[in-house]
Image 1: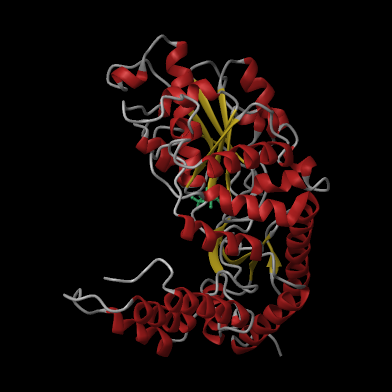
Image 2: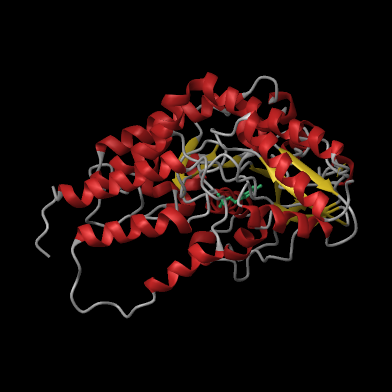
Length: 457
Ligand SMILES: *Cc1c(COP(=O)(O)O)cnc(C)c1O
């Protein structure tokens, strides 16, 4: 290894491959062909004794990636709320990789520490959350949920004079967890990791759109953590925050909102009424890599009670910066990527207006899907209030075959789901580059699949 940091051939090869990739993304097959995927076999070699040149390695990756990636960053991937990466954010990620900064200790990267503070304040304003809340960067909403629930556990245990950091949960006073019937699977996972058990939560009945039924919430108390949801993964619906949170707070309970994608709707005045009362909660999660369109591995844990988060996540050692407001005291990791670089680039390039337009546009696309699919004989199962459309057709198995047909065509990709006992196709729209033409092109691909099923003349 004698490459210098300015090995321009290697870096330029990466830049060229990335630029070519992005230039072709709109027309690339969304799911790679079987033939292309067979190329992955070339990776299955023993680890080499002697390294190859950086240039050679980068060229190999660039060529492989050009045909074997799933175009989740492109305009016709509707599988999950994946978002893409707005150009400024993707470019900022390249810069961040060159800088290789970590914000675990303020002295290691004053730049990233400042970007975290600035974007933190911007996010609170944009998402209409209380100023003074702490904002921690994590890998995604899975971990942001964990942070919120860890602070909630801290709160409940402190209220019962139990030092859960020192003593753990062995012999601890009881704690009640309340979730909706349609809770996202990352919440039970976080509860399991926190020693609260994946199956112990009280599940409150949900209505046909997956919203928690407020009148079915049991009597609450200071021993409770209530987990609500902004944006159901199938329907996009929101739990009725204004009906549940004030009562929960009056009873002394902790309230967490899983807002992985749905919280972003707060940035759109047209959609903000769906979230009414969300700002009364104690903790919130949101993913950068979903609707904010930052590259992957970017989530945000927001919390009204910085002291409780610090109690749960404080990390100090004699060799570290003694500043207890250092970011490492508010998130699970010590070393981590400088995710705020990408978030800054996304928010600064979109502006408030751009985020609002992204939300409005995505939701408009979902309605266009609903109209088009109705014309093709689908039954739309959800109220299309956000960026999602769930549609059933034919007998069991038809939705799966239609999704497979479209995936094979390379035109678009979406998943299937079970919703209200029906199997259905499920389309989520969150990519900044998706246009009306992309929706129509996908509807044409679906129409061909429906014809192949013999369901249209
Ligand atoms: C995607 C999602 C999560 C998990 O978020 P990651 O960023 O993938 O970890 C949690 N809750 C909801 C509602 C989601 O849609």
